[in-house]
Image 1 (cartoon, rainbow, N blue to C red):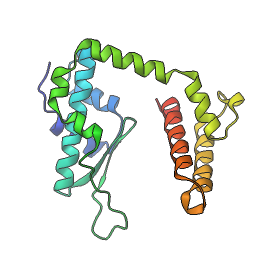
Image 2: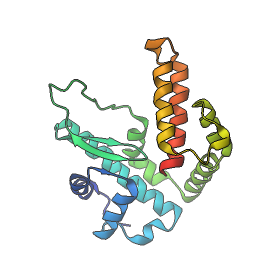
Image 3: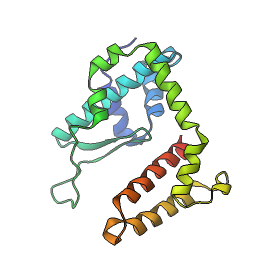
Image 4: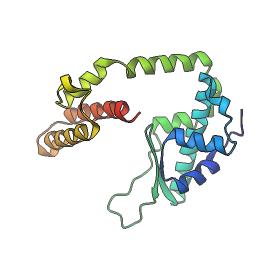
Length: 196
């Protein structure tokens, strides 16, 4: 398919684009000839492309953390590069060496063992879950938003309500951690709808 180690090219891109998305990284890698455009046309080659990008990102995250070069935050929605927190910063983020996603993407056996039918099954289950209207409806109800106006509410209103509920249900203010988790999961669900 292509040269498997994409970490150097991704690092160079992140240095000039510190807040980006996976599809923007893919576009850059295609523009410099590191990923052929046809690699995104079939589910298995799309998975392999995605896997190699995240493999490079997690290895880069570990290396730059070890050398205290900078901090790399990786999520399905954003990839963000920021200065490494100094000794005098009040909050220093540490790397979770047992992050299940990092363990998955740094295990090349996952790349080699995943077959086309596995990818199709994953994609089908994702779309069934993602497009499930009950999921969005439940998230609105959890955030105490009117489910009748779901299609009219914009994301800043949702975010404001999320912050209000987080403050209201915070355990330090007499709330419960279970409520906090439900509110956070509802927000993550709606972020996928509004930022996909």
